[in-house]
Image (cartoon, rainbow, N blue to C red; front, top):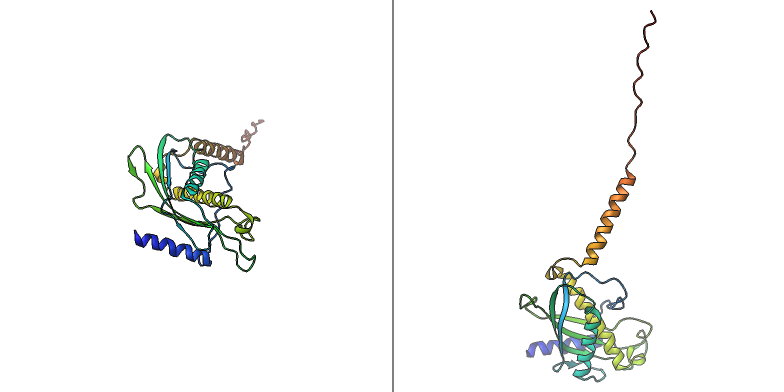
Length: 224
């Protein structure tokens, strides 16, 4: 456990120093068609944060604030699914960094969040991943964060940004393990059926008409 907590501290220090640079998650997709997660339906989503570590140069946040923000982001993204099989989330907030005001273009720290996730299959009564899956996210890149979110966002807005990105990364991870969640969503099957029907109709329309040859002419009768 000590090694894990030490690793969290090292990761947060590295994030603060800009050592880990990665593409920011785009969580602004809730208005788009839902990604296929088969028969998934969210049961319980338990979020704990009492052991989270604060990174350097970070604003303060309480465990209760992060638990509330993370739970809200999970509910927002996953309560939309209405499959026939229940799955439960266990989420632990491991570390965070809420950027403080910096000097634009010279020192503009980024907000970051580290969580561990475990998914439980309700029917099977077991974990889908034996070891917690760790996710690290940075704040989304936007016109409000380009100069540093410490200058433009409140701590609550920074937490919402990070937890929404974390929920999106949970979804991405679930899609990478799509086989966990059974048959495809009804709307996906319906869309695929329409695509197949349209392809068949197009194939029929593209078929060249059969060539028709004239009947052979009868030989002339003998006039004699």
